[in-house]
Amino acid sequence: MKGMLEPRRWVERHADYLYAYALNRIDEIELARDLVQETFLAALERVGEFEGKSSERTWLTAILKYKVIDVYRKRASGGRADVDRGEEMDFFEVDSGHWKAEYAPKALGIDNRDPLLQKELGSVLQRCLQKLPALWLSIFTMKHVDEEPTEAICTELKVTPANFWVIMHRAKLNLRACMQKNWL
Amino acid sequence: MGVISTIQNDCRKATSLIEKRSVRPLGFREWCELCIHLAGCSFCRLFLRQSRMINAVVGDLFRRAEGADRRMDEEDKRRMQEEIEERLK
Image 1 (cartoon, one colour):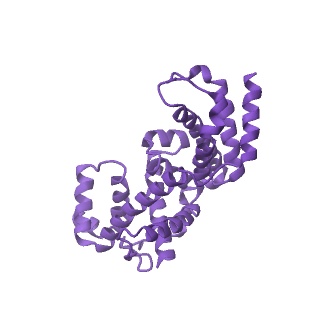
Image 2 (cartoon, chains in turn green, brown):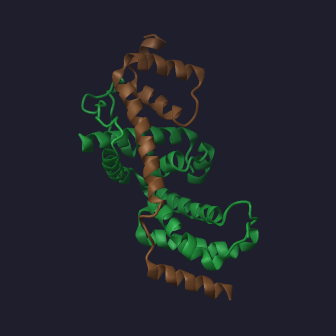
Image 3 (cartoon, chains in turn green, yellow):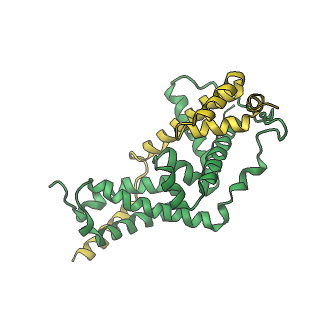
């Protein structure tokens, strides 16, 4: 049965996975659910295009991925795209370029592999991620989680390569500062 | 001020190079600048370690969540199943 689609079993086999995928990236329950539904319907229209080169799940996820990017794009154009939004949080001295004393990295004491600590760290980080502007979060996860090529991200989200690097840098500075603030 | 003393002091530039390096290899000049800076700046060395740790934890966080713990409502699933059946008629 390799290379065959079985639409009648999609919900049973893939709905939870696709839903978790969407919710992870969108964080709005209703929107995530709608995207999964749209994905199934779009996939039904395109059953003929399936060549069997990937698994059914990979194929469906690819369709969902584009729907998620559409949401990112809409959010980004809704005024939340502002690259300068993190500017008020300037971590460095203007003249010297050194870390400002209050933002300078401090040891977090989590270099060990204690799974309980790791879990706690994960939940702090999750909250910090939610504080990032939508476009920053999109770019950060597309790069570090989905490992998309940089050019593809710039094209999909309509950011220049220069802005891409500025956003990657600011996103990490903000995330790290947020971790430090909430962990110590 | 010479090139070396500039990069030695510039933590903004150094952290930006650290982020670049997590995505693509640095050019030779960038790489030298970062090495020179890190040799003399313990804050940025710490930033480098923490930045890598954050990348790893974020990756874990997303992959784990795709495992199983957020399930779709059964009622929603039933509706979707019906809609698919309807379109397959």
